Length: 86
Image 1 (cartoon, rainbow, N blue to C red):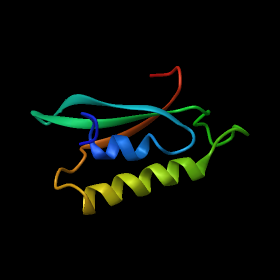
Image 2: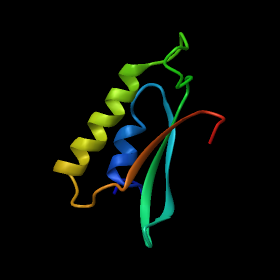
Image 3: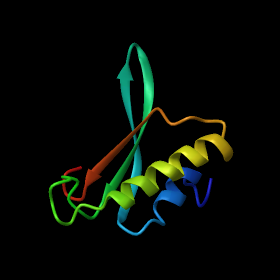
Image 4: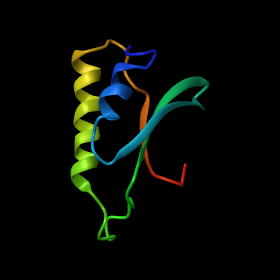
C-alpha cells in the first residue's frame, strides 16, 4: 500500500489519461468480488477521435503486472469508465 492506497491504484493513477481510481464491491455467485474502477479523461467509444487505446493497454498491463508480481491479491474485475459516467 502507498499512502493508504493499494499499489495497483497508485501505479494506474500515474498513467496520463487516468483521472482517478477506486474499488467497488459486487455480489457475484454468492461471493463479494472486488472491482477496480478506473476513471479516464477521454471518451471510451473506439469510434470517437479522442479514444486512447494506448491508455487502456497501459492500464491492463499494470493491473496484470501488479497482480502477478507485486501482490498475492488478485483483482476481481476491472472496469474502465469515462469521466462523468461513474
